[in-house]
Image 1 (tube, rainbow, N blue to C red):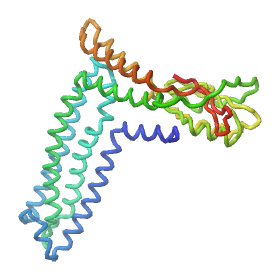
Image 2: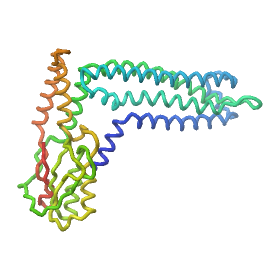
Image 3: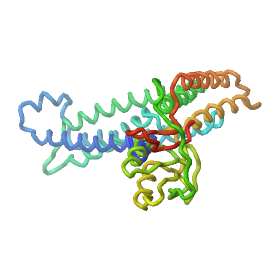
Image 4: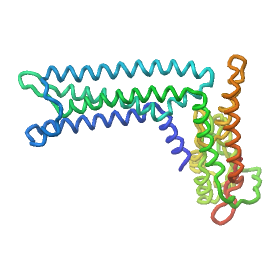
Length: 347
């Protein structure tokens, strides 16, 4: 996967709007579908599908407005109280807790469920008509009640999940899972890849410079090797995932220099994702330092939580053992013809 695409996927998973936005769009589609079914009011099978007793327009508006008001109130109240609780808990374990809350799919689905039910209720409420031609979409109102009951169930499960997610052992386990995934990517099991001696860069090697300040978040090694083969050049990465870069700083060097045109340099930058924050995508140090931070906070005189620090050490020990059992990324990546094409700084 290209580095930029991998970074975009990480941003979507770590965002607090993508999944709720998809659920809200699904609620709009569901509202259009159920209202279309309600328009088929003379169909003989409609009465069998509509198990909800028919209500008048005033009663339908009351049901829909109550559902919408209750859900938007619960959403704002629960999530504001949740963020306050997480802020207090993060002082003991670091800001990692808030980032995990945002990336947690359960929390994203919960917010999407509440917002989606709210949007669905509003769409159905608009369709209700009073005098002189009263119209009540009974199937849509029935689905509204089902969604409201499901939202209450999701609220209960969300609170249960939140109570477990702010515990120290859970936070350590989640960070350990991120670290294990990064190690499996950077130290995959199996035989070592073929490599060769590192070619020294010539004095006139062209420099590929960063276009913005930030951190290297992901590198597409396969894409860089393929690009180097395509243009018959050798690339040397001067930065690896997690390194800080400044706009204009050297990201990579390439030779022969006469083939390093502006378009090729741009294609190299596309395969080295640079963003404003560090991510655990290929950065092993990121998760390791997170565990160290939790352990140091636990050993501070204000907390003196020995067992949390021991849990961090156990997690680090398992991660190091997994890395030692895998094969590290080679410093020199060879092309299909066996020639060095990419020189990196492996972990």
